[in-house]
View 1 (cartoon, rainbow, N blue to C red):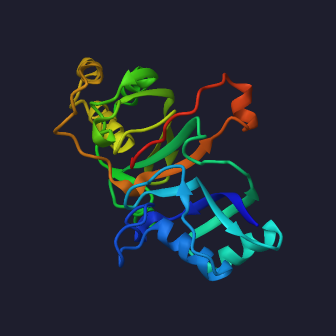
View 2 (view 1 turned 90 degrees about the vertical axis):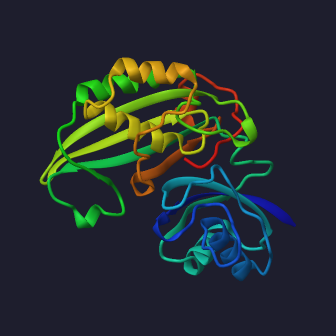
Length: 269
């Protein structure tokens, strides 16, 4: 009997052109997972993900689903798939969940972006963080972050496919700065019901402009309200971005907070 499986997936996106399967010869996360399932089970399946992360973007908590006939236990399937997947992709858990859809059932997603503020390059973080130089007005960045919380038209920060609605609800927008041996490490975390294409990376790019004093808070607020794409700012590089987790109505933490209606998914970020 064919069963729907739900799984959490982690990956280093450095060697891939994003999550979504593309033309032959282009390595993607979806393509690698589907190939592993075919090798283990002998069945061709389509893997559905909670989100289509862009080229070079990483994930700790991507959620996927697929339908397959498997006569052994879930743990055996998990071990077999992980033994077959490349070293930079690994399932974290797996379970049967009939009727589950990772994208349409999701109510919130959390992304984390890492920046390092340093006078010298940090080779060990070259695939994990955006290196920024010079001073940052963190207080101004905090104020800008707070302006993003709530329901807004985020057309200034991203594109929707085929001209769809660009209104999104941001539940959390936080910037944390930590001292490090090389200087400072900045962590930006944003949670929303859904995201537009490149939205997180453009938000981070604009926040850095605010921190550097190149963009005022007033200008930032007017841009947010304008609904017009913010141009002339650096799009934060993808390697600093991680899909941290996807939340669903059955999550204990989510139940402790207020309920939200399922969103229609999101695009590359």
